Image (tube, rainbow over all chains, first blue to last red; front, top):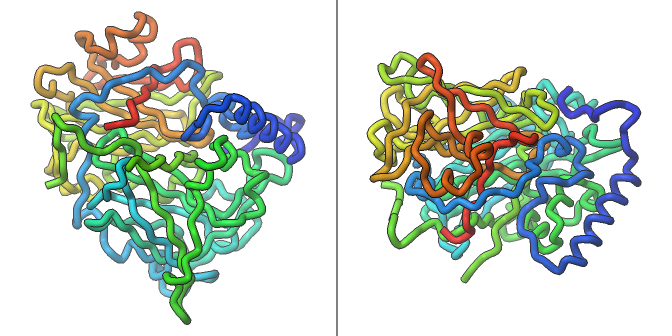
Length: 260
Length: 180
């Protein structure tokens, strides 16, 4: 419903989308600048056309409230929410996997005790959401949402099922590379991040406008988890490692705000 | 050691089964004596409602204190944690129940807001100032027609604040310096 392109006549082909992606990449290389985030205005992602600001973001020096952030605690999240494979009476179908890593600030220091939320499609590439009309089965034993708090060293760990790629309606024959959505908080309001984790070597990367909206190739690599055989357990699950770095140091000399 | 920040990506269309939670939009219970409804619509560049946006707010308490209490995603109905989350409805409307923020130290009070949506490739930050606010550094730096987009309108126990993602009267969105 919500992902429909403006009109049937306006649906682009993958070749047209790929040509737009390539043109923007070429133009970016020519600038010689290093862009960190995704472009808000990125025409290959059709839904962004009417939803990106046209004016420059306004510089704001953060005030005291923005130098602090919400605090989460044991009452907010049950530890079992970190295992997406035990939320129903049976075992979900698909490749059981662990994804773990650390949430760090820009100085490499751990973000401790903060909320991490994930959501994802099931192994067949289907979301539990009424808007998802993908002709693939719902898994009655898999919802695809998880939460945890980071440990003292900034680490998080989820047990889940490897999500499948899925089709969407950005353009003709559009498919998203497999990904897990991540929502992260730092110690400051300004550090808020929602992003997507991808799996190494996905053949859909070059075709995907959302992944390619991060125009810097080195920055794009920061969205890739690494397969780690040391995390893999026999008869249990495969293992992936992914560290997440939030903006800024999370601390200031004049406003030390730490969770109590 | 400086580490490159992980890029953001759109929240996509399917966050609705994962991020909203019971009581998320109620920073205080609706029956709270000082409760106000912070409400408005998220609109796209054609003026159409954005029915798949997610907003978060973070603010000081009415007395200007900055809460550092856990319990934002599992509310006890009593503790003010200063943080809330609300999805927009089919008309692009969001509704928070909260209190008017007080000034922190001698600052001008505002509610800090984060905007996520399908079609929006990274989150946006803005501020919701109270009606009749004095200027702070940010407001003073803006021309009047841009300044106006950051100031809520008064209603009956309401603060009304629309978010225009793109238009001549588009909301002012913020860029914070990377170093905290």
